[in-house]
Image (spheres, rainbow, N blue to C red):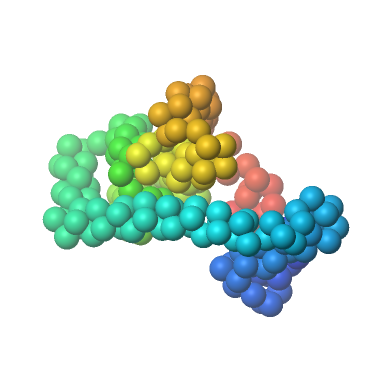
Length: 210
């Protein structure tokens, strides 16, 4: 049933039947049908409580995203990303130094901003610099995505932590301690992706997309 969900969601998006946002709603409806009528591990009498719990978790996440977006607006209004880009250009950073600074910048941004805001603000500023230094755009994009994944798993705006907290009823501090080994692993992977472009590019090249 899980594989069928992938087929329905991916197939629906690529066939144009629904948008990615609508696909999320379709996934929820599909999960409801499977839980209630196929596996029968969620009686109908529990549905109201499940909906209420879902609403509570959604409200918590939306509150976090709202504050992160507000912080992003303040940063943009003060032109801090542009000043950082100007600083990097003035220092004449090479490719290795530039990638290191970008990683540090994105990891710091992940502490206080949510991923979509980081991409919308940072990508248009950092991308032209990366192109001037001869960095492949696909490689640079994948590096940014990995950075966003790391940001999703550390406080205070790590949305995955808050989802896990809501599901496990554990405190954020306790979860942060538990997730450290995985965060370190992700950071090692980030270093590999950053300084080994072939890892990011071999599949597009193999498929003839580059």
